[in-house]
Image 1 (cartoon, one colour):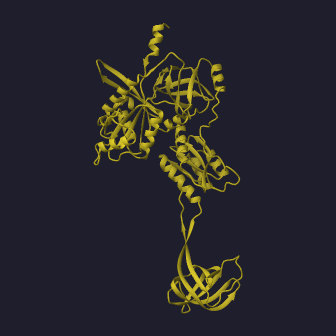
Image 2 (image 1 turned 30 degrees about the horizontal axis):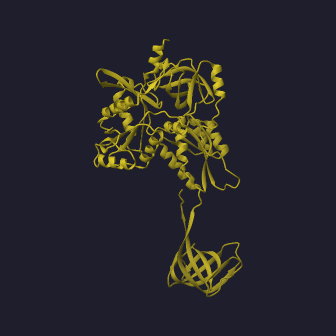
Image 3 (image 1 turned 45 degrees about the vertical axis):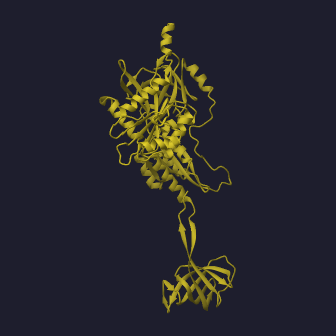
Length: 516
C-alpha cells in the first residue's frame, strides 16, 4: 500500500453514531420508528427481522453536489446497552439527541439524560417533540432547559434545537440534516487500515446459530475469518450480517454488524479487538484483568446476622442488555427489611431446567420478552412455582417491588372502640371469665380485643369471645347498655382475675400493608 493510499484510509470520514435520550413517553421510540420507516427503503425495512440494537439510515444532502451520507442510530429508547456501555467507561456515541415533549417539559429522566450528555462530553441536539399536541409550549421548554445549563441557539447558546412531531413526521428531515451538520463540525474520521476495534452492544443465544453478538465497529476493518477477542472470550468471525440481516464480508467504522462465531456469550459494553491469529487472540484474552462480572445481582445474604426477608428469583431474558437494564433499575428498589436475591439468570426462553432450579431453591421465575415452554408450564403448575413474564421493564420492576412488599410484616395499628365498667363476675374457668358490665363509652363487639385496667394500671390482655345483651347473643353493644361477656385471657400472662370496678378498654387491630 502506498503512502497516499494509507493517508486516504486514515482520513476516511465515518458516519456519526447517535444515541437518543430523554424522559419516558416523550417520544424516543416514535422518533426512532419514524426515522426507520421513512429513511430505510420500504423493501429493505421489511427485511429487519430482529432487533440488533443499532441501524443505519442513508440521507441525500443538497450541497454543491448530491451526495449520500449515513447516520448510525443506537436503537431502543434510552438504550439499555448504552447504559451498560457507559457503566464500563467505554465511549461510543458521537452525538446525543435529547428528546423533550413540548407539552410536558423537563422531567426527572430528562435531567438524568442531561447529566449523561455532560459526563460524556458529547455534542447534543435538542428535539422538542409533540409540537402538534394541544398545550405544547416550545418556548417554555427552552427556558426549562436553560435552567439545566442547556442553552439552545435562539436563547443565545450553542445547542441546536429542532421542533418536531415524530407522530406526524414533521421536521424529521431538518433534525437529520442537523445531525449531519454537527457531525461535519466534529470531523469524524477513522483509520480503516488498522486492526478492527469496537464495542459489543447486544448479545443473545440463537438456538440454530449459537451465540450471536452485535458490535459497533469504531476503528479498522473487520473481515470474515478474523480472530476476535472480547474480555476473556475468543471467537472467529464465521459470518457477518448488517442491520438488515444481509450477509456481508467486511464491516467498517460506525457500522453495526451481527457477528457469529463466539465460543460463549460476549458481555454488553465490552470492547472487542481483532487479531491476526488464534495464538495472538488467546494471548490477548489471557491478559484481560477486568474482574467485574457482567451482572452484580445480590447473590446471597451478606452475613449470618442479615435478618432481611428474601425474594428469590430466577431471571430469563431475550438479550443480555435487558438483564443489565433490569439490574440497574432494581438497585433503586431498596429496603432495610427485604432484598431481592437472584438465584440464577440467563438468556433464552423459560425451560424445564429453570423450573427445577426454582423448585430446589424456593424461587420464582421471571421472564423478560421471553416465553415459557410447555413442559416448563406443566411442571410449574404441578409444583406451584410462580412464573411471571413481562414485555415492559417498569412493569417487571413494579411486580418485584410488590412481591418484596408482600414479604414484609403487616403494620398493626390499634383502633380504640369503647370502654366497659365491670359490674359483676359470674364464673371463673381457668383462662376464661364470665363477667357483666356497662359500656360507658363507644361500643364493643364480639371478637374484639381488650385490656383489663385497674386503677389506671394494665393487668391483662384478652379477647371478648362471646357477647350477650338481655341474655341474647349479640354482635355489638353500644354506649349506656349493659351486657354479659366471656373474656378469654391471652396465654402466658400473670394470673390475675377480673374484679368488680375494673375497666375493659376495648379495641380492634387494623392490619396495614407496608410499602418499600
